[in-house]
Image (cartoon, rainbow, N blue to C red):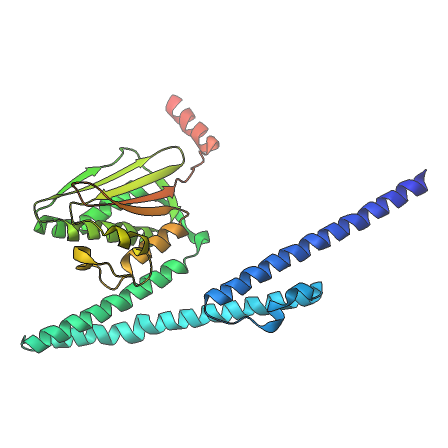
Length: 309
């Protein structure tokens, strides 16, 4: 009868609403828990209300979620302000001091001052680039040809490679290899790894760089003939401000170069690994997902018609 059908529909609607409300409540709880962990990871103590959100009403949970989101936005703004301060208010006077110091006669003391200022400048530069990698907007990524990008990196480092009389063994595919990403971040990533290989390779040795791809991903491999990396240092190699023992420490800088590489690769949904190669040195391996480029069939059809005519 129509009455029973209407009643069944009404009950089903109520059950559906209850289910949706429960799902929404669960989603809010997950978001709050995630934000609480985020605050803890940033070294901050979550508010008592956020800690005890499990016993709150749904409306109270939404309010706490909005409050926490605002808190995170404030933290993000503070980070950007600090980045701007380091980028301009610290790097500029450091650069000016280095230029001014170059005008003085070189002595033991001026040389030491130059080294300290240069190191501080490199550290500020590294912090700025690492922060930019951390805050990169994936929605602004564009399609990039990694073969062309890697060749540009090699061109940039050509003078250094030539000065050490290194043999660069390059193995690239003839076709383009497309990824979606930030050109500047990926360029600096490849440059950092290749520069490491060049710095640690003895004069008149070889550095091998290869780029291969399959149906889903690309693999960029760089191998040097340097001293290798102590096995106990490999797990911390990509961490912020990490320092390496032994011969590999000489060019380790401020400990942000490989941290930048790790952050950038993860931002591009990839992975980076390193291992020691027998009778060679260190091998860095970067994997990135390929961009699946869709063919515009309409344009393709028009081109075929033009060729046939």
